[in-house]
Length: 136
Ligand SMILES: Nc1ncnc2c1ncn2[C@@H]1O[C@H](COP(=O)(O)OP(=O)(O)OP(=O)(O)O)[C@@H](O)[C@H]1O
Ligand SMILES: [Mg+2]
Image (cartoon, rainbow, N blue to C red; front, side):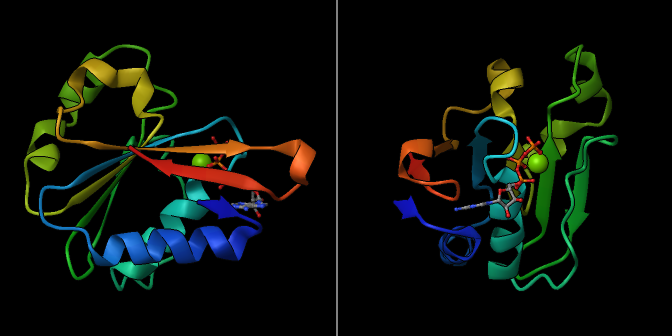
């Protein structure tokens, strides 16, 4: 889809979250500042989560309580795959909630084949706030 502004991204993510089911894993791929965390905020709203969502950069994962539990990962700072095993990620990936994984491309080998991949890209020729969002 084409997102013309932050609100479009919030709305799209919220709608997607409303169709999410237990065990779903959404991987969020995009360069710095494209809107992955904005997407995550919308996604959380769609699950009825009122908390303010920030990127869990330093502790890799944040857990939020919604219609379904939301397991929000940010893999950006992972340098060694052991960091992922140390937090027991399998319990979340194969757990009772929905996973949203920013920078999943950094740990691609550990991502289950059932995961959906969401690509957010800027298109500066079409404006500062223009984004394309593709779900694969
Ligand atoms: N169409 C749009 N969709 C989403 N965000 C937009 C859009 N247009 C402008 N923005 C702005 O782009 C910025 C996206 O920031 P955000 O923190 O979500 O990026 P990020 O992909 O998580 O970056 P990082 O990898 O550095 O964490 C915000 O300041 C937001 O207001
Ligand atoms: Mg972010």
